[in-house]
Image (cartoon, rainbow, N blue to C red; front, top):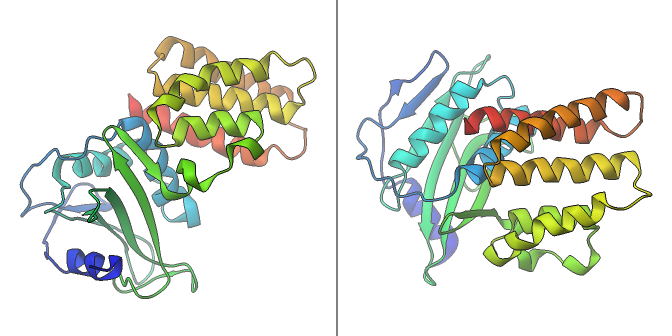
Length: 260
């Protein structure tokens, strides 16, 4: 069955009514049975879903850790191949922000977590409803045991031989290959042992190290690493071209709150 037909079939499979989880968020789980189907490590859930569904496109950047956690916890509790999960987030203006989570199992056994939204990437507005056939913002993640990998982070999507060392360490951290997890720390150490690192490369390597410490649940180390990065940014606050890294660091600090 073509992917598009499979997806549309899943989307129209159920309709849900919901109840308020907070002042702004409705998690429509009233008719769903608890499944605990999703086995992805919280590291990937908190990284990808916070960045992709809250920060990107400024969809809901003002969300609190408690609000994001309520959605992630509901996702882990209810989502399955049989159950979709609908979220409605109150937004100023005429229309609210809608998210629909679906797990799709392909014919080859591959499982995908798909997040559909009603955000039009073309018009930059929230549509009345989620429409697959238009330019609605959608994210796809491959599921493999406790791994969850964004489609563009899959190993076959990147030529690792062309990556910088920092990008390589980052690729190892987020790709679908468990064996590459063993290469992350040594790759970062090799970078940080270089004597001629510029400011941005140094911060990038230390940021990947912080991510790795979150992944490994090295709580004491990540507290120290966060303080170290705070100092690095403060020392180099007049350095140009660090804005993107600072935004990534701020998102990572938010992720740490989500992981508590």
